[in-house]
Length: 478
Image 1 (spheres, one colour):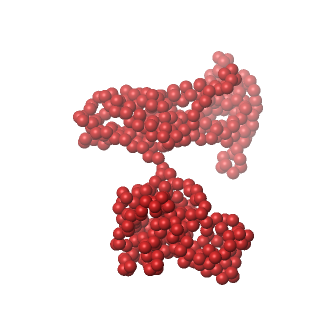
Image 2 (cartoon, rainbow, N blue to C red; image 1 turned 180 degrees about the vertical axis):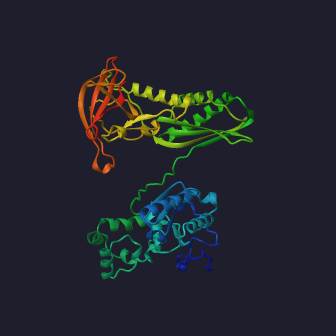
Image 3 (tube, helix red, strand yellow; image 1 turned 90 degrees about the vertical axis):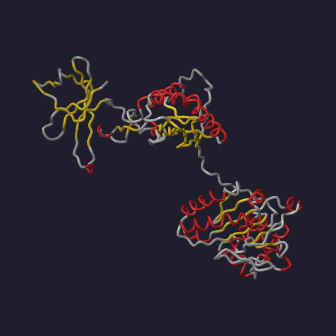
């Protein structure tokens, strides 16, 4: 066999003459004969392993991030991609005929992988191999043997020349193999399996058996993140946005089918109305609870369109999902007279979504409690869409609190021993002492009371415990 060119930086291991018709250098100009029917039956899968030893110097989080980006490149040639330590393995036999062979497939992937490594400022070098087993391909790639093994029967001879360093072993296991005089995998083939299992454990033996195809290799395949985007170019310019609803209804039908196939739902999507000479008009639909109900989403779109004025005729439409959520099915209650039902909460969510569609998201806020005893900081206003996904509010005190707190407390008048606001006040309950922490920067020491005016209004008042000990109005009850 003539010496073949290899990718720069990738040593090419030439097969021995005896195995030249069985083990083929994976990268080169020579075309490979298509496997026979018997070979396809014997080796139904062909796993391409991509090993990147330079990733070992990175953190685990960065390794995972880089491998996921490389997996997105691999999904262009295979739908079965799995992660391993500094490596990717994906099945390619099902796509060989489409790409024109393993050399063409490798020639398509290699430049993209090298460019990606250069973008990450990493050494633009990688190891690769292909064989009928996942573990066998990994061991060949770790051993820097850029080989293609078509048949499972040839794995033993191809793997036997590899050093034992390609195995996943700890320091003690490596020391034992060295003391036994075992340097290559072919030395392990001569040893009894029971003795190896007794000395090194079942995981060691199972790794060797998986490499030879004698044990199943369950894999957890990479699932790319879901993405949905649909667009449509109108045949003519449209000024009445109500005429666009049939097209958007078709978009929603596609979206619901997409979500059901993946057991997902959505809580935020964007509908864009594209104009010819103007920037596009975007409608952001946010839901308090994730949904995939077409009727509900269409109803929200109709409400948005009722208040929409477009600056120019619409020439195209686009719908894109911004946030995907897990689908949570609803089930009926076992006991209808339990006194608790989710129907009221669901109706409130629908009302809030319709209200936001009419007046916008900013004017609608949710009041949430905060783990703070000072009344000025005990509540906060939140986006109801975000608040619905967060944990429950912090528990608040059992003491009465008014819904309306004044921006600045107002001084109350004291005349003849009586408190006056607009009318004289009568204290109903109290005191409740509230003091700030010494490290807060403001010294607050107050005794709070619930008072009532002659007209029936209830007020929240307090008296300072320091200084002039004046009385103040701080809040008004509903």
